[in-house]
Length: 198
Image (tube, rainbow, N blue to C red; front, side, top):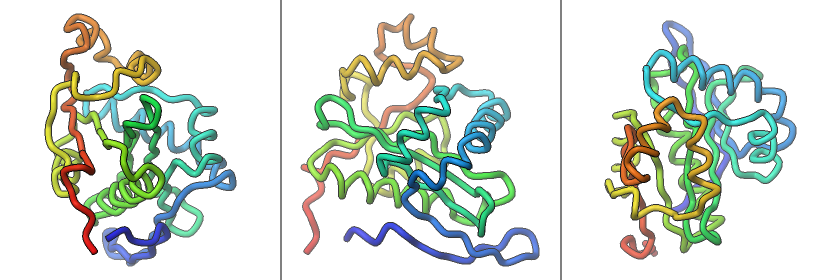
């Protein structure tokens, strides 16, 4: 069952209990874009894995189009992800999932992932959802939602999507393998294989 897109929940960070709101981002959230981009970049460096770089303008557009999820602790940025449709809306990618370090370990990433999944399913109910990730935690969240590992050939052939990988430090692997595989694991949710529960 699809749940509402605005969810409040208290989480514990060290000794404090903080309420975190998870919601669909809009133009009013553009003030957080620089900190979102910085948080993504720092996390990629710490993990030592690649992540496709996105521009300020790209994330602003996702927010204005209602294609992003943001988590806030009051006015403080806590987490983010966005979605995009590809291949004439036959595929939807959920991307850029990030949680600020001090808010990690309390299920916030899962809440953000579930909200982006719900948003994608509401907007494009027949589309196949996919995710490219090198993180074990995201793989587990994807699996819990019904995603399965697939080859890259099972994903969209939309050239615009694949151009987005050019900002990743591992892009050379993708090129060398003629886009058959990379460092990331491809995961796919096919709604045709998940009947709607009444």
